Image (cartoon, rainbow, N blue to C red; front, side):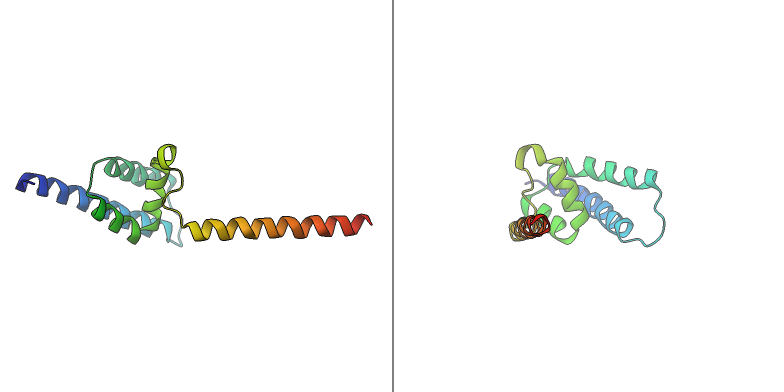
Length: 113
């Protein structure tokens, strides 16, 4: 890898991390967020995430910035689905939904009888 390649990656990383940090601040803001500003940040972040970064670097950024990880996952949904979502969380949600449906069905049957 040349010095030029390293500088290019460093520049991309700075852009992605700056936008990721900004998106996290917007997501956690208790005040009113301008929708145009939000969309502009997300559009710039999508553009930055479309540029190649080493896997280890990308994974570190995504692990530190959940909103950015969600944007990244949505960008790649057609290829990899919800690959960044926690399997444990997905399974737990599915089980909870099944339990609630079973409870609702039981309750509905007891109301009829």
